[in-house]
Image (cartoon, rainbow, N blue to C red):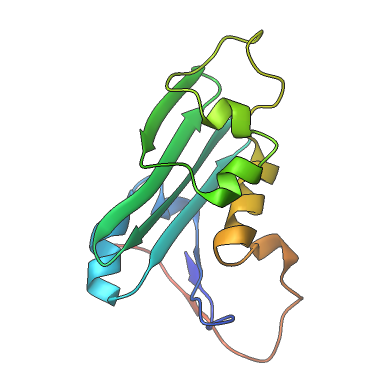
Amino acid sequence: MFVCPPVDGWTLAVGNDLLLDHPIDIATLSTTLRTEAQQFSSHRVVDAYSWSMARNGVLVRAFEYVGEQGEIVRSVGALTPAEHASPAAEFLSLPEGPDESEVETWPDEGTVLGIAAAWSIDPSALAGPDDRKGRLGRLS
């Protein structure tokens, strides 16, 4: 995983290990860091997308969808304004995964990045490298 230097007050950690081998307990991370913590993921191969936010150790919002299974795995908390404004808002407001005829726009990587931008930072919009150093390592 890679941990970048702070960007606009946010520290970004990037890597497959964060979700695949070591799922994040975002509420505990928020408690430990004594700040808001967020998580975003996108896996195009299995059509899986997720995001979550915790404040002061409380999970405020979490959503996870796996398109390969056609299943909303997790939906906790009320939709945020960013989700209501998303092209996938109709899908996100459903309590269970719809069939293909029920909605026009499904969550995708653009949905994840749009919510990230509204909540904090869209990592795909960051400028190229600068002279600051980050940390690269493995989770144990």
